[in-house]
Length: 274
View 1 (cartoon, rainbow, N blue to C red):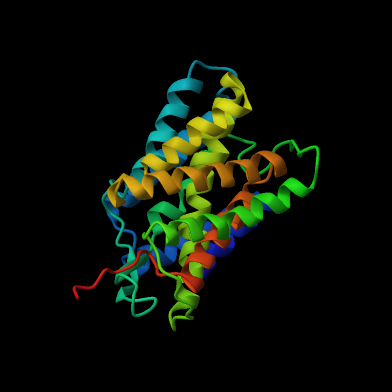
View 2: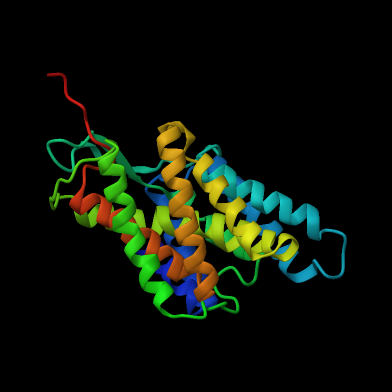
């Protein structure tokens, strides 16, 4: 079921019809294995109906703004796991990336994975829009090099430690992180928020505001995480702005997470008592 769901998200860039067919098969399987329960089915039914109505009738009726607000609110609620009826599967529980890393648990999140589908209902250019390439292509190299540099800065100030490792659960992590975390977050913060704000405030202000909001979304991890998440938000926002492609920003986001996982303590350094 999870591979079908990931495949449906991948197909969003190529064939919306194929993507939706794969999505409905995945959802049917989720209902059968009780990953998706009746409250979630009802909530999804309502949200998908709103998305369809917005897409087909938003130019002819006053439904446009309320419909968009409802879809975005639904997407945020899915991302925060606030909608009941989703029995997300634990992919790994209490695992350590390395001996100095803090134990953590990660999930295959069905609810969060559905965010791109909802936002596509009110933002037709969510997946792709005209790019704004930098004048000098070398800025792409600077952007990519800023990712390991940022992790090294976090190491210097004591938030992380260098700790190369390849955990045995890396395959599950890559699937969950790429499709059910990075893509969902980029769809919300770059594909929707930054893009919508840029229509009213311009690209620079939209980039800054979306990055700050992305940082604040990590508030539960403390102020240090908010600061670094804001900086990474700028990196992902520039990747989206320069490429015009949601998947480029998603892959940059995923690459940063993989650099963090493979070469540093993940998610943070576990300070053991001496």
